[in-house]
Image 1 (cartoon, helix red, strand yellow):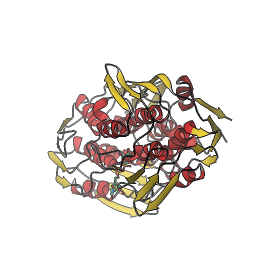
Image 2 (cartoon, helix red, strand yellow; image 1 turned 90 degrees about the vertical axis):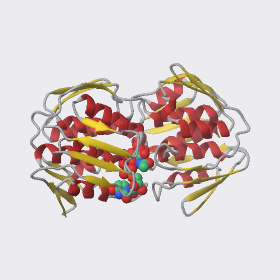
Image 3 (cartoon, protein in one colour; image 1 turned 180 degrees about the vertical axis):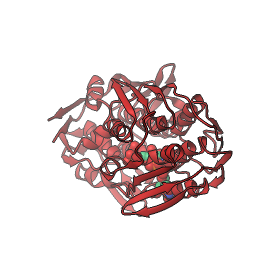
Length: 416
Ligand SMILES: CC(=O)N[C@H]1[C@@H](OP(=O)(O)OP(=O)(O)OC[C@H]2O[C@@H](n3ccc(=O)[nH]c3=O)[C@H](O)[C@@H]2O)O[C@H](CO)[C@@H](O)[C@@H]1O
Ligand SMILES: C=C(OP(=O)(O)O)C(=O)O
């Protein structure tokens, strides 16, 4: 199995190009099931999760053609209603075919995603919303079975602003009869990107980026060409890396409006963050100041940046408290960081980090996507050579990560 080796102590400098966003590309590729004809998507990141959704779309009867960062999908042949366990267990975002399948084929059978390393991850809000649109929902043998003779617009309040739940319901509502109002929806940039796509396809989605979406159903949607937005979490990971190593890095194509919470926390930590015409520049300096962080739905601090920001705090001056409010178990990286010399204790949903002088390299285990990224960051400042195992988690969400870090002067390499 591949490992990533990081030699600590290098200062990062130069420019790094951000790839397309995984969490925007996945719902957008799922939305291609809503139309007949070839859609062309540009700037799609080359990632394991993208391969998995491609396999799932093909399994459902769509044609998928991939050429580097361009993916074409034609769902004219959509015929299969089941998303099998084998594909859903590899990637929870497979659940995003639920809305499009229900809208197109009036029927869907999707393996229940279940929990994962970071938490329970229920989909009750997706299912209740589909019921309110007129579908019947049954759970049977580990699958959710949805049927709908006709979807009709409804006024739906979400108990929590779920990202994938909002996306599933937006896609279903686009082909429902009449007007759907979705309240307390997610406001992430990936939601805005999906709304842009659906509107380009001829849908009528208003209010994306606000807590209320109004969607007027249409008879049919048209195929389009569409470009995936830059990955704000990949960008944020490099921004933290620059701050951590006292570096000076231009993160090309990072969108400041998508990253305001992180920018604000990096500035409080002492980094200089400058918005340039083609990206965001971060210059780090020591001592790093301790900063408290609480993860929240967008525009709050993203849970997907929590592990990486925690690494920045491990060698900060003083004490920092990081509260995780989205996922109940998203502190699995803590025990690995402690093995590298960090002083972190966990109390309920908060981690208390007391800054230490330095981290020391150790063999460590990646446990989920962002936790894995945090271990690379820790390796960048650790004394010695850090060996990260189970890096397949990283390959789900970071394109060419070792090349991108090496280009910035870090000593990061993959061993097969
Ligand atoms: C709000 C939030 O930050 N969501 C993150 C979440 O999206 P993802 O869509 O995976 O998760 P959700 O946004 O659905 O979940 C947010 C919260 O709502 C709860 N929930 C969700 C759906 C549901 O039907 N019932 C329910 O109770 C979840 O348990 C969780 O506590 O993980 C992604 C991958 O890490 C991140 O990119 C998203 O930013
Ligand atoms: C945890 C993530 O992905 P997923 O929801 O697919 O597990 C992530 O993108 O950080």
